[in-house]
Image 1 (cartoon, rainbow, N blue to C red):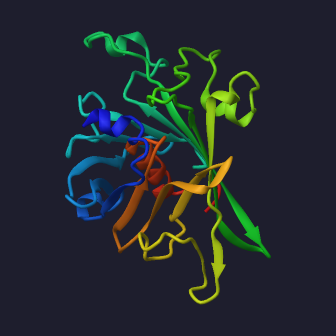
Image 2 (spheres, one colour):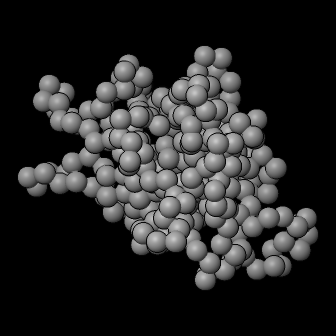
Length: 262
């Protein structure tokens, strides 16, 4: 299961159709729980919930149903973390944070330092003084024909390259190793008084959280789409070269509140 969630979706099979269930019950009223299921057989895939007590938004993603707040659990797949404004997010695998003091790991087996699996950037558009839809960009490592990243982004100290910085600065020596994805811009629908996208029936309700991602150099092919289908249900469809884990991370970033662009 871990390999299926963390590796790019199989090439040539089209979209992998999933859905997200949001639980906003009494126990999760402040920080809802999100669970991902495979469409069709309703197989549980992974879950996450915003962690309390952090200065910025922080989500642990787990393939265990009830341990998404235990960072030492063997079920943890990785983490999504934002800046203060909610305009920039980093996607990490389940490795160790190199900034932690060594004493934190005294009683643990040695493990790998975490890798960066993606960076997400949000902005907003304004038309005639009114807020428009979100502007969303993301970058991931390019992968080879076998789905392996052409470069492993694993900064060990403050001087090492970081994916987000290389992308924002268009670092000449590194930008060719990154794939740039942008949101498919929605159009205004006067009938529903909202910005809408064509989800071919997979999304049935308008929401600022709805989005589609395309490769910047190939805007005609949808690589990921996410959108509301009910009060607390959302479709999540993803295909090569993104992984289900990366797709869920992007969906979580859309759920998260944003001081900088909402």
